[in-house]
Image (cartoon, rainbow, N blue to C red; front, side, top):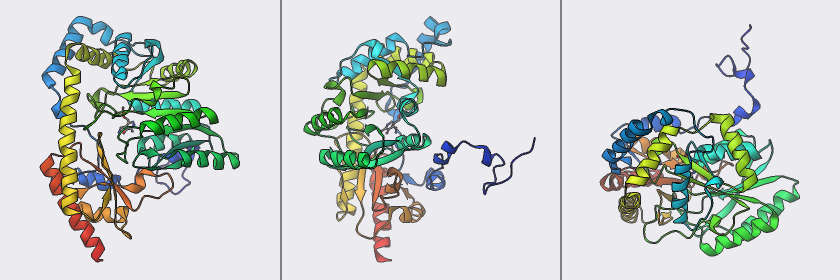
Length: 409
Ligand code: PMP
C-alpha cells in the first residue's frame, strides 16, 4: 500500500478525506482557549453550565438505584428512539413551554448536538442553503458546513430575527435558484446574541414559513433558564407540522449525561429514528434511566429555580461590571441563558484583540466564530454561566483594560 503524500498537510492521509471534511477545520481560537483554561485566566469564553450547583448526592442515589434495580436493562442496548419513561418526562418538561405532543413524537438523542447532526444528515445536500440568525450557534453552523451546505444569515435585533429580513432573504436566495432546506432558530436567550424572539414575531415567522413552505428547526436548550419573566411559549406550541423542536438536559440538568431530544412531525420523526439507529444504535440506556429516576425522585423544577437564581446573579454581576468599566460599549440584555453579545467601539477587532486579552488573563469568544461569512469582528460573546460574580467583575475589569489599550494604539 502506498501512503499518499501529496497535499500541503503533514497528515499522510490528507488526499483521501471526503470533500465534506473541508468544513471540519479547528477554530483558529482553539489554541488560545487552551491557554485560557489556565486557572489564572478568567474565562468568559465557554458555555459550560455550573454543574457544581447540582445535588450530587441525589444524582448518586439515582445512579445506584438504577444499577441495583434495573442494572441489566441499563447496561443493554435499547430503543433507538429512547426509553418510553424518559420520553414521558420530556413531554412534562416541554409542557412548561406550551408544547403538547405524544410520547411517540419524541426521539431521544445524544445531546441536541446529535439531533442537529441528524437533521442536517436528513435534509442537506451539497450547496443547499440553511437560513440562520445573524449571528448563530457556532456548533450548528459547523454541522451544516460539514454537510456542505451554506449558512445564509438573516438580520436580528433585540427582539430576535426580523421577519421582513427573512422574507427578503428567502426571495433573494430563490431568485438565485438556491434550495432553502430549513430555517434554524434559537428563539430563547440566544447563543450568542442573548436576545429572545418576541411572541408577535414568533407568530409572524411561523406565518412566513408556512407561506413559503420552509421547515423551522427550533433549538431551545435555554428556554427554562429565564430570569425576570418566563420566555414566550415555544413556536412548536402553535405549529406542529412545520417545526422540528430540539430540547436538551445539558443546561437544566447536566451536559455530562449527553441527553437531548427532537420532537418532529411524523414523517421526519420516522427518518430521525432510522438515522439515529444507523449512527449510534441507541442512546445510552444507563443515562436515560438515571435521568428518568432523578426526575421522578427529585424536585427538578426547584433545581432549575436554583440554576435560574445563580445565573441571574451572574448576569447581574456582568451587567454591573460592564456599566462600571465599559459604559461606552453596547451590549444586549439577556433575560435568561448564558450569554451577552457586545459591540466594540468603532475600529476595534475582537479577533485581533484576543491574544492581548489572554495575555491580560481574560478570555472571550470573538464574534467571528458566530458568522459563516467571516463578519463579526466588531462583536464578542461573553458568558457569565461558569465564573463566580467576583471573577466576572475581575474579568470585565481586565477586559476594559484591554479595550482601552487597543483604543490608544
Ligand atoms: N444548541 C445550542 C444553541 C447550544 O448552545 C448548544 C450547547 N452549547 C447545543 C445546541 C448543544 O447542546 P447539547 O448537545 O449539550 O444538548
